[in-house]
Length: 209
Image 1 (cartoon, rainbow, N blue to C red):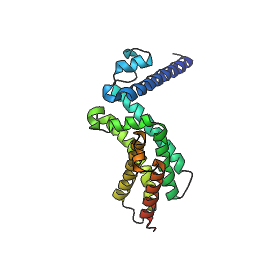
Image 2: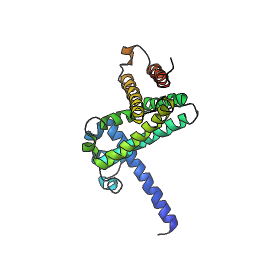
Image 3: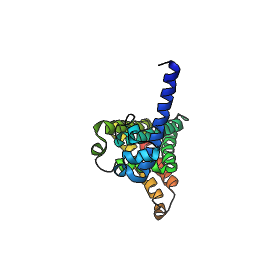
Image 4: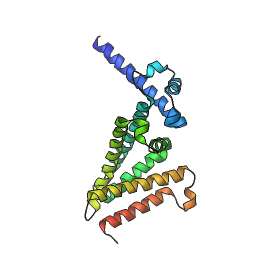
């Protein structure tokens, strides 16, 4: 096959693949992983199920691609925010806020993440896909943990990881409350509460009064 024809075919395949991924995202948003099917995704994409299988052997593979793309986008936003300063405290605050803002403006991404982490992920996705997504999430935690380590008077790796995980857990909890329409019950806005938590975390880590 001539080089021009191969390039055209690759471009066409990439376009078809993206159409399928976009359709899968919409189906997963509406039905979740358990309720989705390859047939429903094909209908949303305007193609046959046979057109999907050469690209994605299962709906679980598609789900991992959708969620993995979301995690990659979040990591890029957090890295960009943290790279704008050399001060660990500012980097931690900016990185945390970047994660919050991404999920706040993409609530469906948060819903997808929470859906797969609700229950036995390995049973839902299989070991390989689960491990791949887990590595992506851990890489995001590592970005925050690096700043925590720089701030801590006595950086102990297990403690550093716990602090980073607790920060993300608090952040996600605020988002769930906000998008569930329940943030008013705690009498403040989610960004203010997140800033307060992060400020106190930095003070505790550095030993500041």
